[in-house]
Length: 293
Image (cartoon, rainbow, N blue to C red; front, side, top):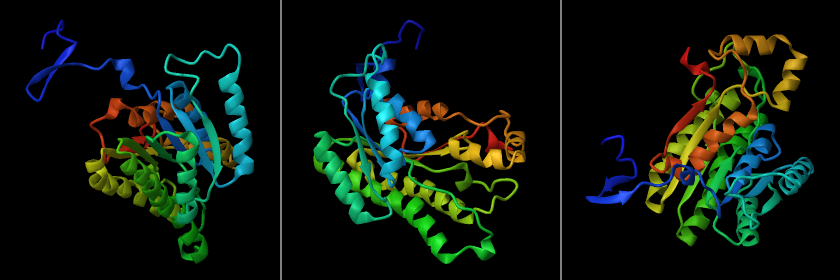
């Protein structure tokens, strides 16, 4: 194809117009369900989904932590002179919900309520709910191991099921992004005593592949985003308590730094949008190169 032939392509034997690049990332009119929304990563990412035109339904197990974040997000969205891009529209909705995603019954009820409140299909799911807990493997308390699997792994299944069933009923396509971790593919160096977390995130990565294989027939794509080290308030507290941790992490990362939360907005919008329309069952590792060494 010559450089001048840039606006058309052949599909199924017929010549069709190529989509506009910016429209491929357009989320206008869509609703994104975002769990773990009070965390430092998804607080920031929510702004970018609003900028891309999506409504957002923010879920967290702790409403006391979530509501101040939602208030700040709403104030930012409504601030005079805040120039959102062309995809933003007055019909966007920001809503907040308390739910423990490890409880399947509560998840189903919450997702049903979100669907009714927003009055439109739940096209996008970002499941960022999860936590980490450190313990020597030989001393890991059984109840704590069960809980981290319940939240990080079982919760991923429950929220995916609930949102998928609304899309199947609505007969519309969807894009799900399960937040895994590079620790689901490798073991951090030095070992961080997080067997429960690593196990749960490895399961999330394979779950995304399994769901992708089953739900493609419904035009629901399922991918995984696996972050590396992120400079969130939680990790900053850890580094303040142990100043050597930051130096150790950065020395093992080819880019020699930790990620800022906003650096995951692009990958997440990409996975949620039509820009990744032929992508499903993939684990997108965004780790500054940590896992290549």
